[in-house]
Image 1 (cartoon, helix red, strand yellow):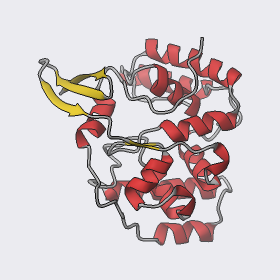
Image 2 (tube, rainbow, N blue to C red):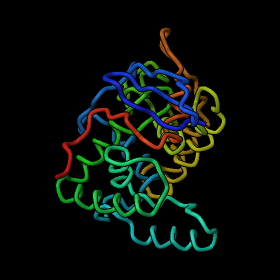
Image 3 (cartoon, one colour):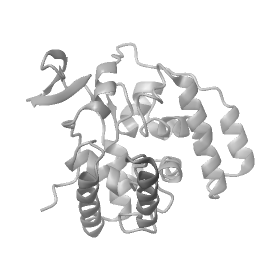
Image 4 (tube, helix red, strand yellow):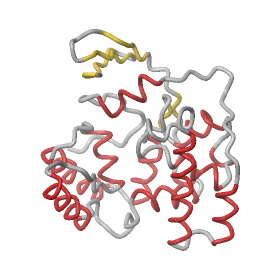
Length: 248
């Protein structure tokens, strides 16, 4: 199993649990930054509908969600639910690790609350959509759009957008290159959620779900499966694309 990553300038060294070097990630990630106004509204609606339905109502933390997670932990004897808002996910990806402990969760809550004080909701969503990981070395929605469809995100249709928004929750499970059936199933779930919350009509939802997704990857594509696998297993998360200024 992968033990940790260490950053050396523009490289990340991936070691196994015995301290043996198993891969060098050379910083060849595709990263683009879009202002909020440049991000299609369907992208925002799709990601909110599946990741954080109350994004515009809460102040960084969904305490009811946390209580549900606590209840699940008591029943299962371990942390089984994340209960993280979009703001908490952004706080974790930028400032913390992927380790699932309640100590880290408390840190995450404090940072998310402070972020909500310093930034607008649209700014937070902008940072989030430019920083989240879409697998295969793609950080941010524009990089994912170019990497999987060889198109700018503004030119994608609803079905393609929902398809991309299916990936970040678990980039290994929903990897379009290796598990496209899983990605399609989650795409359909996102479309159903968008319909349920009035973002799209039933007819639009039906048409989008019936659309066949065909990947169109650049000729020079480089699948970075090691990075995708390492992303959630490493104890030290060192990948930091464009992000807001650190909170002091």
